[in-house]
Length: 279
Ligand code: C2E
Ligand code: CA
Ligand code: CA
Ligand code: CA
Image (cartoon, rainbow, N blue to C red):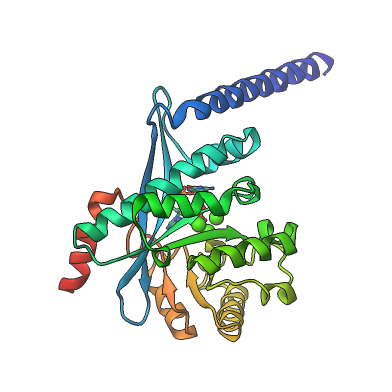
């Protein structure tokens, strides 16, 4: 038993070393990812439930690592956040998303609101507002076509700071939405002070919507809360027709998910819009 215990300790120690090494290697790679042109954005359509029309897209980051291939954002965003490279990466995302929105407009594709995810460290950057203004100006994009998605936990850490910064962004004409709503601790009282135009129902509440009466109750509560606060509400992770039907019945405004489309490269967006016009 003693022998086994010792082996186990060694085994765990090796595993921990491997993952620490891997973590450091990824962090080092991330530091160079922007300069090495290894980052790409894919875009997932957001659909209006009543009309079935695509009104916007969410930009989602992909990292094509030269040796490891595609690294998932859930795997590397937390590392970039920890190491600080998220600020440079986030800046690249913002600028590229604005340029892409402008390219679609120039190509005569229907104008789309492009949503960009903002991480806590990026939000805390005191130059965030200036960076956003620069990205819009350099892309030649009007502010109303940009939306920023922030999480509940991010804005609840320092409510007054978040309100001030969001008011500045809103004053420029940028839309703000709360991502993954329902998974963090929001003060409902604070929520009404934020200049937020949209709440996003987290996909964990959408997944079992057809079978779980708890999730149905949560979805309905978030929809009703959004409307009481004069916000629009979108559900993410919509994969089935049944989920769509529930959400439409509860009065949800918009949806996003594999049912309509996975995130796709920017060149595929015009065809998705054409498909919808033909329908
Ligand atoms: P998120 O912002 O909550 O994005 C939604 C995630 O759900 C995306 O995963 C999307 O591909 C996935 N998804 C979309 N439709 C469905 C569906 O019908 N079913 C299921 N099961 N999943 C669906 P992805 O692209 O892997 O991104 C993961 C997370 O990484 C994002 O979660 C976001 O938190 C973060 N992220 C992605 N891009 C960026 C970025 O540019 N900046 C920052 N700070 N974070 C980002
Ligand atoms: Ca998001
Ligand atoms: Ca989300
Ligand atoms: Ca999420």
